[in-house]
Image (cartoon, rainbow, N blue to C red; front, top):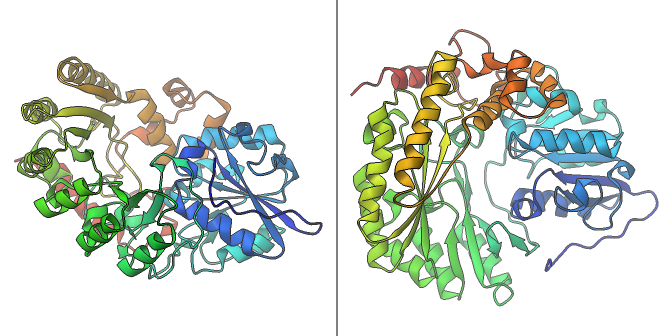
Length: 482
């Protein structure tokens, strides 16, 4: 059940706009960007916007009125994850939708080529304080969509973004999201860190923080209406005034939960505030099992930082920890993989509960590792064999210590193809999303090392960085030997 929903009734002459999230409701309602778009479009006199979720009417009828998608004039799809492409294509095919189709979200900002056949245009960037939504709301043809920040499948496009986060959604829908039933406070965008595997540092650059005053004023509006506040940002605790913000929210009576935590930012004062604010578990992402590989990734986090963070938290009553790791990293050796097990053993010896989640690295466009081969090996078949062997080892050893989940090597191979592919990947949507289809269509080339000198499918997007700088970092990562 939603609280504080936006209610608008359709009148003759209004344009019907579908806001489609091809994944679960709990994930979609937690997206503040989508809530902003929904509220803005409904604020326009000539439009009515309704939402679609995968687990509500199978995404074929709207959440608000049950109106079929095919009856809408325009569909806006939010592509948050590459694997959602298969859902999006299925929805378009089954719904019989014939209107304008526009996609946005992180995947559109990273590389829309693999799904470009199914959409008329893509929004590249953040729409707040731009004219993009007004252009889309009034567009009746593809030609009407020509605007800064919109790629109409030809030429180059420059990402748009608000230089300051001096605004905030003034009417937030409260519901059971992936964060629970809470007020969601987006404290910033972009990241001050320079992890070589992470696409956030490029597509949301430069890092921007929201003023504490705006966040507190927003929280004040919801005081007594909801008990929990979830802080979201790529690295929440890096906010320059995070202690002030946490103290204010806890003082207002909120249970406070940061969506992400850096081990090297968990000092005694922050942890004490979080514990007072009801925090009972902490998530940490060491990414790798050794300091050597964390240096390759430019993670800026040592084993000492991780152990110290667990010690500080456990001494203040936090007994539950979740760790995120990756395998298939550049320069990875078996001893680095064994290091994951050794680190978990050290944490478990501190008498705390641990769960571990491990993914194969999917090299992302716009990062220094975009040229890397999937699995980290130049030999395609050997890489798969080694990665599966390492996965079996980790399951066997970690299951003796804690709850462990390791993602499928084949599944992340498909994700990599969807991320790094060109327009020929569109053929994949006529098949089941598995490695066999990738091989049958000759798409394994997108899993191999990419030569530095070749033009990349996503080079047409201007995110404001210099490609040569990424290449220099890639070379440093590959040559790292100590």
